Length: 403
Image 1 (cartoon, rainbow, N blue to C red):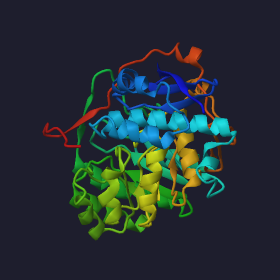
Image 2 (cartoon, one colour):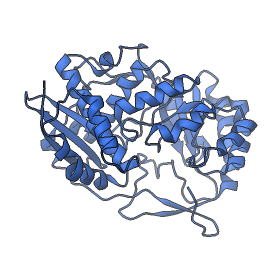
Image 3 (cartoon, rainbow, N blue to C red):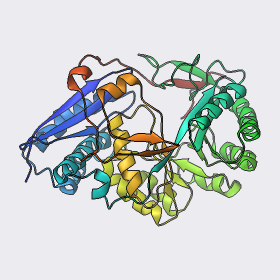
Image 4 (cartoon, rainbow, N blue to C red):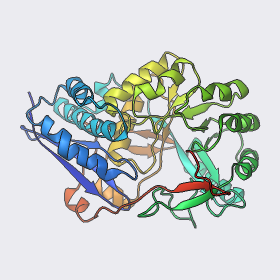
């Protein structure tokens, strides 16, 4: 029976901030969990160090479900992104430990592979439609079978989701929140033109996706979904803020464009009504933000009853630990749909050496015991934390946007 004897929170910034929990057992076995909450990293680090870690010492590392229930129900103040990211880190690290002790990759402990590999989608963005399509064709040439398209909006100085000046895209862009200007009208004019041009240039044998970033009202999202129907999108993501889940009924009644939502969800309760009323097609909750592998499997199981598939968030604000966990999860669940893939920098990969691999638009977590990810702690210490915030948007008249 492996007993937890220590747990440490490691904060590092190899180009961007990551929070990692490392759990150690009395037999020397260790496990890693990602606890990164983009723009609020130190809040989770504190919650783990000050409140969670003291409760772990002496516990049986094999009792994953019991530990999950203790951390969720025992705190009284349930849910929320900070709490659930902390629970996710513990849960993921314990699955890593269990896999290492069993000498098996985590996906084997989850019932084995339900497919040969996980289809992933790339990001293509550019200042203009032409720039975006050029990037998309380059990603297609790398073997990606699915590509998310975002382009700049004419008349706006910057657009969320689009990298600046050809740099790598990173939404947390300043040590205090930057402010940008947004116009829904201008955005709605350009997006259908983007996908019309993409189909003409790329054909129909590639899946195309688009992220709205919660920026439309329900009727505006319905109009956009209808306008995009001729281009057969794989999905339109986060069409409107999901706090009011009834709003998705209006979108659903007006368009057959598939809907994906949930990267900001942190529990099954956030997704319950959307799933049970079949208002979405893909659930994008993540291992790190939705309570770990244990809880994400519950969300997937509920979704499976209603023909809804998974499409987990996988941007670079999640560490390679979270990417590995997502691939083990995705390889094993029956209703996997697709996995987002934004390759990490060489700096990040050096801090987090890993066994997962990409080939011809697909990814596999590898056969290493556990998650198949390690952390170079000495190298991690050389990358100091840098405060970073996500941007805030205002309408052209100065009104702060409500998303």
